[in-house]
Length: 327
Ligand SMILES: [Zn+2]
Ligand SMILES: [Zn+2]
Image (tube, rainbow, N blue to C red; front, side):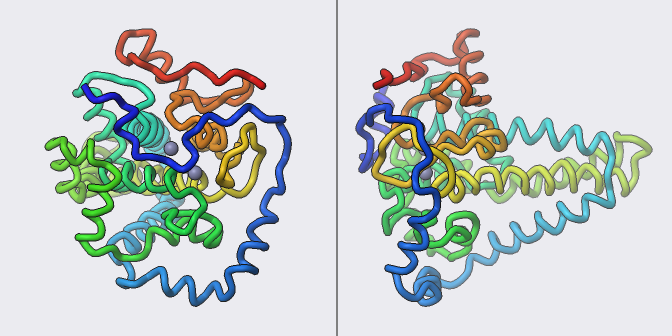
């Protein structure tokens, strides 16, 4: 089997930096300096849409936000419970454990059925197929906070948070990115199938959640159907979106650094709480293959707790969890 080391494309900062003194470092001040140097932000912003706007993505993100606001008028305890349970399954098991630590970085190994199970959980978060997500994230590591980084706050905080998702990419550009940055997933026919039919995932979820509420929950009917749909999908997807997006935006702006890296990555406690441990982003940029993102005893990492449990029950192996030596 191919070693996971060969799966990750070369990165500009993949060396193991020393554990440096814990301190706040120039939080945010570099952004003003960068924007001053880069001249007219609006011209640069327009240049970032060479093929126009990706309307399907933009409208879907907008629709989810509208649905999340409408959910206030369709509250039910059952809807909230489904929202929280599905948030853990899709955001923690799907995105952080599956897409990020397993598929992007090969931080541990597991059986193929489990790999596909975690892929499906991630797809339910509607952040794109594993092929798209993994290729984008590996590109981020290779060009962190440089011109070719897909989502760096050096191009503006809101660019890194949400706007980078809006430009349309022609299919050949899209395919070239996936071939370049995720050749291992490209070779897998199941992953190619997931990518081709990804669009059905939100549709099936919406129909399934509405039907669940309409027929089985509470007194049933349209109120409970909409409650399940709006809380189980819209609120949950929006919460997951912003916690993932804060990893791209906030943890490259605010927080402290345990390690000296060539990017602006930071450790941010509130992002870590929202994203099941992904907020310890400076630790992660310094040691990308580690399954464990919290390196100090108080850096809570829920995703690693799940991986540790999988390891202890024999469901995960080759777990990369040896912390670097403290300097
Ligand atoms: Zn980053
Ligand atoms: Zn990563």
